[in-house]
Length: 405
Image (cartoon, rainbow, N blue to C red):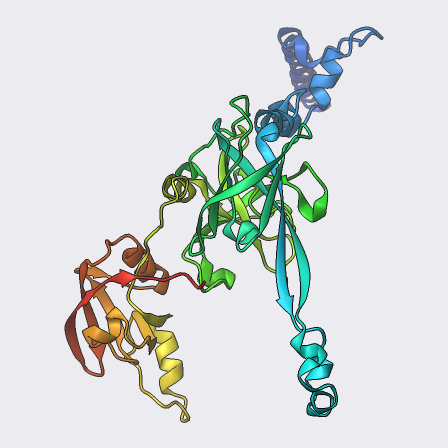
């Protein structure tokens, strides 16, 4: 009785041994077919470190290569970037202290307040050469009201600059220097191709430190001047985190290929790491008029406005202290109408909500500003407004916006 059981046990044991042996054979065969997975890495000799470098190289390093793209970009445009020094003389009273009536009686007509005092103000900015004839593009606020403009090149040469034209609305100016025909030119790119996340390289003279380069990215596009806090301008800025400081104004903002995509123009004193540049496509159009001493005309309607949404209107309407009920719709709310303006002449009133211009829906103050800016002087715009529960169609003829000066 025991022999049959022993025989069955031996057969089962033989089966297990055979299965184990077959597994070992298959494993060894697999290792022989795939030797690359088992072989050690080739040794690196003292004279050959290329394999080791390739293994340790990061994707960013591989993309840049041995020569920094920033270096190449700056070398392409650097000699065309200039420093602009300005001087301006102002006249003021000697001391407000002497305006006191007691001292006026004591000194009589010859009191010190009658003797003006001159004070010289100096400014610093940047710019870049856009034509071999010596045309320099910069910001209007860099050279505005300056009695003397001095343009200094990177090679040390210095020239007196003549302001050809200024447009305060877009903060652009063109300065002319007579320096022969051997001037370097900054290559101008296109701001229409710029995307958020692109490299941004700022070149200029911040705080008087000549030929300074900072690197960042394009943070956002079409940041309106109203959002930046410059309500008297008509611009959609390129926003960047490349460091921009006083003295950078008027200098170029470059892309990774060394092409000018913007003009560094403004910083917010309450922000850290945020700067703004005028798109170069806008600057090209304005500079073409300024270089010949021409005046840039800007159409306007004459309204102070704010973007309206249903949520904002609802917040206003639920406030018991609100002086006015606002339609809970999308549009542009008219906060004020400038006296004797085209809007006033057309019958637009405070509290109106602008819905359309020439049949095109208007949903933001920036959009309305751009529509007006793109119109012609004297062009009649058909403006649809909502006043209370009614809508009206008004005809507004644009007029020229005068500079603050």
